[in-house]
Length: 457
Image (tube, rainbow, N blue to C red; front, side, top):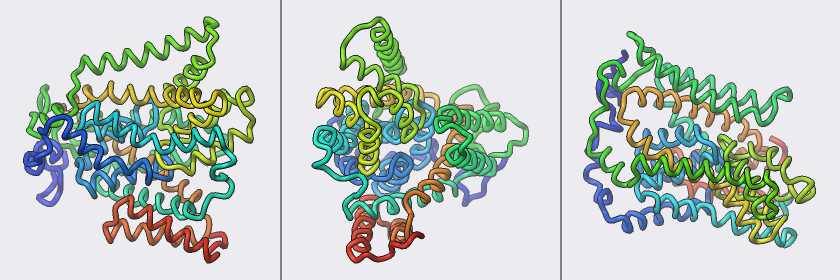
């Protein structure tokens, strides 16, 4: 087993995320009443629904910058564990990450309020657009203040990816490289179906976890582990930090089981009612979106072909579908708000609400179902070994996102300049995510206003 020296975070039998609670034990917010902790959640999370442009992968970089570096809301290893947890569940990964990070401080109520603040801005715009599309933004000709936002968001992704990758050990780097290469391949090969990520991404994640689990049981492991699973059969000793985490989440195993059963009953029940011929337009909407949300891993544009098959041409034309898609991609917050446009176009305001609830609900329910299991299992050495592999593969997927999102968002010299400047501001001048996105919007608008730098890059 590799043992790190004094300058390395990991040493034999020690893990700073578990054993070092010096800074955590003096946080006055830890054992505050629930409502005080919920107020903390509101203060930290309210802005994300307005500034998190760029899609799910960009959201991860923005969250890392906003929550870990700027607000010191949680430690980076905890952030990565929750990211890997969301990657392994159906639903929108970035939304599940937001909910879980908020729940580690404000419990179910805090996570739910963070979710509402995150979702509402985009939901309101897309629902309004579904009712009055041509009075809102033209997706083919976005306003100039949006032009610099994509490259600024991608700069934050690169920054987050670099920070995450620096913490990987030898085996972790290999797993991340593999996941990155595979994710680029399946998103850029005409012979590979666009929905193949539904199978490939979970296989990469769980395969990475299996490899690190097996490696940790070897007599001379390749990776670096805080504690070998074979050293004892019991959990790693809980510390003050762990006890505070369990207290703040406020969920027991029985609550997790209940949430899982709730998800299953809604899925089976809605499908059964529709198949039995129960004629209700809103039940039809809910069943389509809930079923889709229960089958999608990673979220994002993966849902596009699935939803297109469900709603075109029955509910709308191809043109309407892609106009809504373009608008959804230009909005901050979760891409799953696209459901509100589709449901609103078909059935008005009630349809928008039902569709959004249907698509969001599986991921929302399942992340809460898993949190109590995760908070207990994360103390075990075997679980920590698995999480290392999941994290490494998840970081590789972020790297893959960097590759194809750069190609999509940096299309001319102006975009490239915004990318470089915003990356520098975030990395070296310690700009937070809101300030970086705002600077990207400002710089991009300046180039557009003076018609500068618009030759293809």
